[in-house]
Length: 51
Image 1 (cartoon, one colour):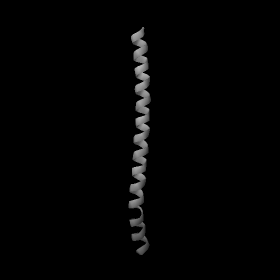
Image 2 (cartoon, helix red, strand yellow; image 1 turned 45 degrees about the vertical axis):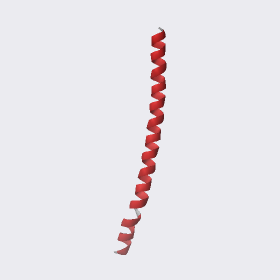
Image 3 (tube, helix red, strand yellow; image 1 turned 45 degrees about the horizontal axis):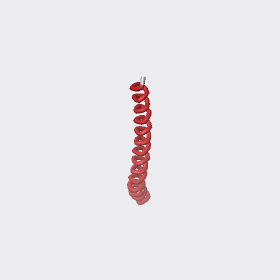
Image 4 (cartoon, helix red, strand yellow; image 1 turned 90 degrees about the horizontal axis):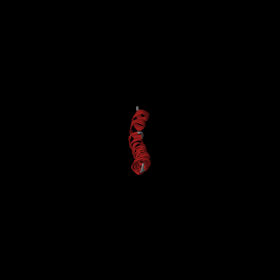
């Protein structure tokens, strides 16, 4: 019984840690993508406006 409770506790902690990590990774990726888009977007627009 104590082992089951411990296993349940560990599972919950691991899930919370993973959820937090996934959120952090998503935010990092989104921030990185936004930075890439900011860098990439102006060049094609300038090229299009010239022609």
